[in-house]
Amino acid sequence: MKVVKFGGSSVANAEQISKVIDVVAADADRRIVVVSAPGKRHGDDTKVTDLLIGLANVVLENGDYEAALQAVVARYAEIQQELGLPADIAVAIEADLRGRIEDRGTHILHFMDTMKASGEDNNAKIIAEAFCKQGHAARYVNPGEAGMLLSDEFGNAEVLPESFEKLAALKDASEIIIFPGFFGSTKAGEVATFPRGGSDITGAILAAAVKADVYENFTDVDSVYAMDPRIVPDAPAIELMTYREMRELAYAGFGVFHDEAIIPAVHAEIPICIKNTNRPEAPGTMIVPERIYEQTEVAGISSADGFCAIYIDKYMMNREIGFGRRLLQILEEEEISFEHTPSGIDNMSVILESSELGDKEDTVVERISKELGPDDIAVEHGLALLMVVGEGMHYAVGMAARATQALSEAGVNIEMINQGASEISMMFAVKETDRKRAVNALGHAFFS
Ligand code: ASP
Image (cartoon, rainbow, N blue to C red; front, side):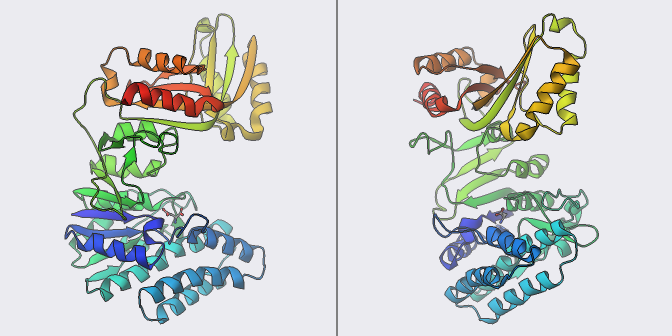
């Protein structure tokens, strides 16, 4: 049995939804279908989720929301007409949206989630109708009713453990299940959503709950690539990678699959396959618990801008018990999360996303100066992180040498190096302005 999830671009219009039906019909094991809200139809289009957030904001500001509401209804009406479905579906969707607006309580975040969730909810209803019209036995399932129970952190909810047992019943359904992604219900029966892009999470939870043989995640690229194809247009496709490699790569901007979505699949050891709705015959990328690897093989190189480093120098730091803890405690108290902490005998640095530090930079520097008495403290912005990831790196000799030589030949100054504790990754911090050159140089060193 397979759980299949289709992202926003795969369900953006009637043409794409017809492809979805063909893909599902082509394999009798594809029994549970998770769908996003309609995404972008072309480059400068707006996702329905973003239209809904805009609509909710106008409502909250007590503005005239009619135009914003009609913009959402028009997206569904277009899909309904092009699929040749009865017009009362679009009428019902308009009534549903008006109902959500009229019934809004005073809880802003909850109202926001109710509106956002309608994007996938109404799309799932239309898609279920479209399956039936094509002669497939299919049925829309409401997540809350099926047992997708979530914490009440609206907009950032997490699945509650009891959901898995409840959702397991879906495996016995005789029809194809069309399940809206991105949301569930709190124990109090209120709609709550995952973080943005959360339909991936819904799919992984369902795959784990029904113990699927594979979780297929359909998107609009043929596979995951070893490097960002915008930087390296001929980057090789990754056919097979492990969960650990995926996680280490996701860590620095490898945005094909939602970071959190991997976790339920990992716990249940369900292989994940990333595939293309527009080219379902392409093999895609399999993400599995273990794989056989060559020792010197690198799975991928990810990179992202937007990091900064706090450098702290203090003579005899190595003798001062608790220094690291107190430094990290300051960050904890300021609610700042960090990425890496490379350290030396008399110095320690913390690498974090610049957006995490935000307007707290002065406070943090002041607190470190006052509470830890360093000889020197500096904050450097404009850093990019590069991750070179591969299971085989754990055993291979000379991988760091190859990487540093490639960077030096490309004239890239390495600001910092850190080997992940897992030993399946190496991190390099470079100036943002050097990032693309660095990725190309590393790509050349490990893939040509
Ligand atoms: N529609 C939601 C979003 O745009 C969830 C998803 O597509 O996964 O974030």
